[in-house]
Image 1 (cartoon, chains in turn green, purple):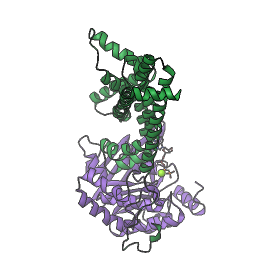
Image 2: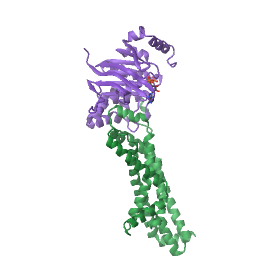
Image 3: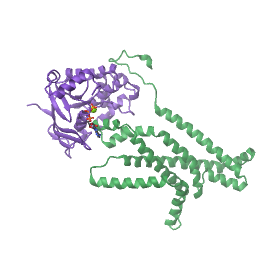
Image 4: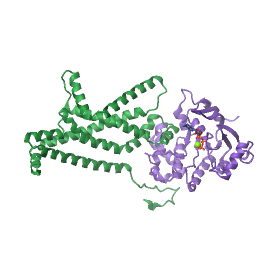
Amino acid sequence: MFKDALFLLTEYKEYFIKGTMNTLLFSFSGTAIGIIIGLCTGIIRTAPESKNKVIFVLQKIVNAIIYCYVELFRGTPMMVQSMVIYWGYAFATGGKTLDLTLSAIMIIAINTGAYMTEIVRGGIISVDKGQFEAASAIGMNHTQTMTKIIIPQVLRNILPSTSNELLNNIKDSSVLNVIGATELFFNGGLIGRKKYMIFQSYLVVCIIYLIITLIVTNILRKFEKILEGNEDFLIVPSQTISQVKNDER
Amino acid sequence: MKDNILEVNGLTKIFGENSVLRGIDFSISKGEIVSVIGSSGSGKSTFLRCINLLANPDGGKIMFHGKNIQDADFDLSKYRSKVTMVFQSFNLFKNLNVLDNCKIPQEVVLGTKPEEAEKIAMEYLSKVGMDAYINARPKQISGGQQQRVAIARALCMNPEVLLFDEPTSALDPETIGDVLDVIQKLAKSGMTMIIVTHEMAFARDVSDRIVFMHDGIIWEEGTPDQIFNHPERPETRDFLSRFTKNRYED
Ligand SMILES: Nc1ncnc2c1ncn2[C@@H]1O[C@H](COP(=O)(O)OP(=O)(O)OP(=O)(O)O)[C@@H](O)[C@H]1O
Ligand SMILES: [Mg+2]
């Protein structure tokens, strides 16, 4: 069994490598764009109501659109979304099809964006109200407060959920096989059918997925540690507090 | 005639059915130190928050150097840097270290150059005795230290009036003194301040005027001697006697 798997792996090395690369490309760039979408929509949804009537109405409309977007993409399977978007485009243009790589990244991005909207919104809402008040009380406007104070805290707080999105996307990008995107699962199937070694081929695929997610999980954990920052800080010697214990470093 | 920095006329604030401020008339002149006392729920915090426009007044006028702060063309951002607030819960920016807490607001709000902002930050941080901790994050220092940094952060904006909302109520007894010392030093340097506090002895020492709030209005005001030694209205006497007996009773 392992001999077959090893045979497939060496014989069809390029297919597995290409599939792995595509899976990484789709999931990483899709997640990255999705995070940006989610940041924008999350920030818009939590912005205070404008006093300007025109902007206020605009805000309401945009918020309604974001609401529909989030519910639509969280409430349907990504596999179905892939088909609807890919074939919907073909239908609307009378047979032209989208570039597969582009479609794959776009589908993951839009899907992730919907989840990230809610994650970012929750992250902003859960920042201590005192942070907003202190910033206002000192003269910072909403944009300044968001960029300098709130978003840095939100990014740190939502890191675990964001990591989770990335890991899910690495695995769930396998559904893109339905539109024929040549990611790992698709290529694995291709080889399996060619050689009548379906199980052995998917075994290889399975192990590659596992290796990727293990590596990514570990890197993300290290990253979280770094962001948490040092437990200690350096005391700067000064005239005013020279009696402070220096052995604390 | 005194030159009033701030003038409040008939200020009202309603939360739902609850009339929290019912017509406050108040003014403060340059260098004056006013302590606001009163029982819980009398509207002291709401009053300060209205002055800084963290809460929107429902009626009345607040004038800063003769200009209505609620006018559409009033520069609210600049005003808030001039009349800034120190909170009970410090509210240091959690994502920034001590130095940046004092530095970033200057750059963002006042447009101060980074080197200049750092110099000013260091100056005020050493004034409050926190210059040794510039690399620390807020959660790494004690409440009293955080509050002193918060005061330095406010001072960095070069304010004309400082508003304090119970600056020592969230502190351990040992660190209250450090913070009160800093405020006392500011008082000596001529800073204009409105201080909401339950520290009666401190209020008596530091203030030029005491304001007793009750039921959403200024019930009685006067010099510390007048209010603490010869209060005229029964509610004031009642509050002070309850307070000296047991400050946690009200
Ligand atoms: N955002 C709000 N929404 C509704 N009611 C509020 C709000 N803020 C304050 N209140 C109410 O207004 C009243 C006055 O509150 P305020 O915080 O001004 O009192 P305070 O004098 O500062 O009391 P304390 O000494 O406890 O701080 C209280 O009854 C409070 O419940
Ligand atoms: Mg209060």
